[in-house]
Image (cartoon, rainbow, N blue to C red; front, side, top):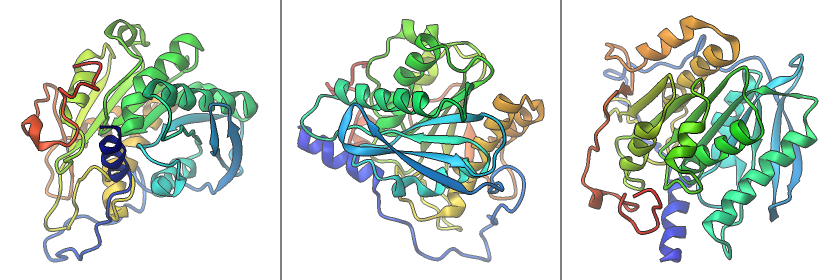
Length: 321
């Protein structure tokens, strides 16, 4: 069973890229050159740091070169598999280009329990916050994760926001195609600050993680502002919104619309207090004659039966089922 889990979740993080050509006559997606979704001015300076909870992998901390003053911090949890930063190079580079620090923590794959992986992920976040505290504004933070890391976001946020007191001046969570969530109860979810904006995103061609995991986290949330988005594939653009969309999916353009654009609006709203960014985020879930993959739902329902997914909701490994 553990071997099947390792294979399934490793494939989720390292999916095959989408490289076929789009139908340029029908595709209305164009590279985003300015505004939300476009890269910012900063280049990344990388630092490595030993993770006290993972002797096999070093963490990577990305600092925006030339950014003035302490910067907001993104704590990122990767999908199940080796802690390879190149899997998420596109979205990491984008976040740093906007002036944010990104902490890419790690956890062991084999010979440990899921709880031990969570503990390793958190120990890495905590060590990075201690080592680079002078450069970090820990009053403005985000917890972002994909797949295994997405399911870990609530527990990491609880440790950071409730136990450590981070995020007093702005915080948001992004759970991307989350796997099962451990070390978090409904009471702990309710204890998260109400101002912590929650953004949950799933993908219409994800056959790995049951959308019911994402729906559970959305329904359990007590956030004043919460968003549930389904990312849709586009036949005309040859965009496949699969489980690997934030990672090894080969379409950078799809990532601009599915990740970078909403991330930028969230950060501008939460970190900078720009109320117009909230409006922009709302509009990303509306139908448009131009390419717009995101569809928002306030009452999300599963699109497929559980047997469609390799990791269904009622799996005995799911502590929240």
